[in-house]
Image (cartoon, rainbow, N blue to C red):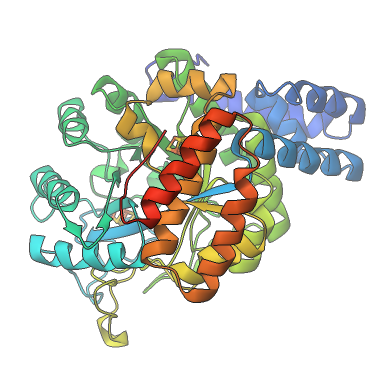
Length: 472
Ligand code: SF4
Ligand code: SF4
């Protein structure tokens, strides 16, 4: 039985409802008139149901496809402007007792080098990240109650927030760790995390169990219901994601949107972010061995369809994707990207020797953060290091209501300029600095409220005089 407001995984991600949706889509995907109607509805910026969205994703009509892209660009512009928020992953430990078949940290991999950062090593990593200019991190660890217990994660968060090196500080720590208990989520909340991120990997239960043959992650229901426990534990902002390539993309797309509908139905707040990783090569992982890989064209269409289906949810893309792919999907709705990332444990302070490789997957975009920042500006985007909402208590439904009314823009745009100015002062190369100064001058004119504009000018001057950390 399908019930969006059920607390049971098999009811809110109902296999029967996904199959019925896929059958409906097969039958109606050539119905251009119906697709046009759905596109018109999406144009009201109120989102789409999983069935409506799936029909658009499946439709092969060239005009409809063009309509999806145009609308995705429009919604992106209306809600997120030309800003792109920057973050970096920080791998704390690759010890893991799970057996995920797409990840080289699985327990049976006996030759990958296992590493766990000590608090001193975390300090070195964080200082290296601060020296690049990062302010927002996503913490990653494998699941291992002996090597990486929750206490280790909590201690690491405390360490990270306490490092103030030169003008650097990490102002928001998002956490991507294994599904856990309400009590543990409460502890993460108390430690001051931003978003709790957990990828579903696949919504297809049978495939899920096959791809996770052993370890605690094998339990599909426990994993799928994790976001509910996180929200019960007081975490307002949760980040969903699937790993495209494991199952058919249509199945995953429908499951992902059903999960978003479920969170809205039960908690009154949809997901804060959605990530769209694709399976990648890793130490003993051959991405080509997975049958459901998707082309760059389908990938772009998925991004655009997510953008118009859940306009208030941030969309994240990592350095798994190449510069070319990232460029294409930025305008279609992506609002956050990582830059200068290392996917190994301890890869920022010191580059790893090849024989010591502890990376989770191969990075496709190897540019430095400064290169990514410069490239974003050359392509007309404002790189933003903003972390204001979480610090201002604008989370969960408070954030969503500001987002839905469009008011959040009055904060995002000025904050992007202020944090970019900080970046230019402290970390940018001369070329990037020149580009950035021009961009800030130009973008100041796009602040409609004169009082706010004057305040921003005042803060910008103070930043140039050495002060830091202003926000709206
Ligand atoms: Fe462990 Fe996560 Fe890798 Fe699975 S995906 S093996 S849980 S680190
Ligand atoms: Fe994100 Fe809030 Fe900053 Fe806007 S103001 S960029 S929503 S943290």
